[in-house]
Length: 307
Image (cartoon, rainbow, N blue to C red; front, side, top):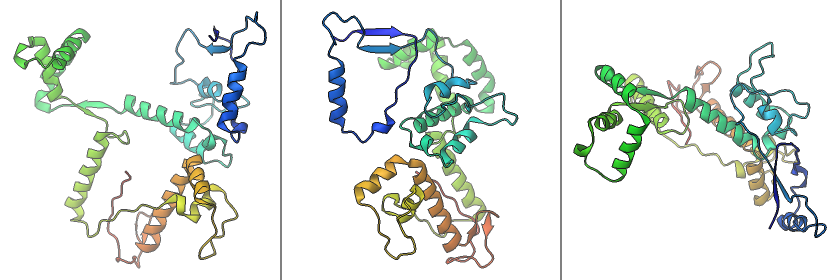
């Protein structure tokens, strides 16, 4: 049985430079490390670091500096640093780090996902609100202030047991009625059901103002099979002046796509902007159609959304 020691001391070891080793080599090395050097050895085999208090993620400049010392080797440059002369938002700094020439941020195994997760949670915390009818506002406000955690717990248990609504107490019925009267709005959170409804409503508003659309199409460029993506990724051996550029094999292309999702997003943005600019005659800088138009004439308006 392995001995485990809980310690508050910190040390970091990252093996990013050893990614070319086979998985069995890592497994074999881990098994050898479990073998005690001597029968009477009292040193722990595994050290788990912990602290007494949870680390806050809001207004914590040192958070990412401690999580990723290899990305911030000098211990500076954290998010939401109040000592900066010009304020810099979390979102804007994250975009900057993922688009600079130093690819360590975008190539890191977890940095991109942690930043995205924190952005999603912040939007859920700051941009989620309740919406009620104006005629029900007074009653809903009173019920919201009178509902306690115990009432919600009892109501949840009764609903799970499929009890009749008539068997609920008056307080539980008021709480249950709130589910019908209050809608949770999260239109600014990408991927949420409310954001999809918001997009549909905007498209319907376009119909009312501009009329029905003349054309509908799905645009799905494949980064794994595109020589343009290989150049965006950084492959200088791909010659785009050739009609059929030579590209790496399929396995390497798929590996590059998974390795650099930021380059894939840049490729998608570049592709649809080229489509609208050169085929449909849309000027993204001026947000209008060019004078001569495109293959369908002058585009009055369009609406696009990603899945």
